[in-house]
Length: 88
Image (cartoon, rainbow, N blue to C red; front, side, top):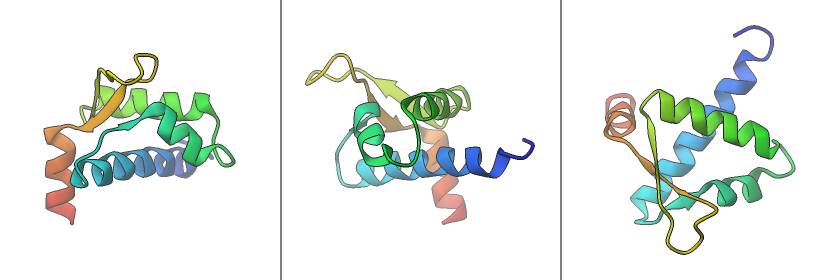
């Protein structure tokens, strides 16, 4: 991915891990939650782009959020669950 490839991959991995951890705890995490946690490190645009990449790769699914329709929930897809089980 060029000079910024490692950094971009780290954002993707961090988001996937946060979504998976929320799932294990029986919670749903939102894009707004992720942006609040990463506000001093990554921009909202970076978070949005990473989520879009994870959705396109079939690793994360976007679901409706009854509590705040402006901030959809994120859940683990079967593919991400398999990846974590395979690679520990």
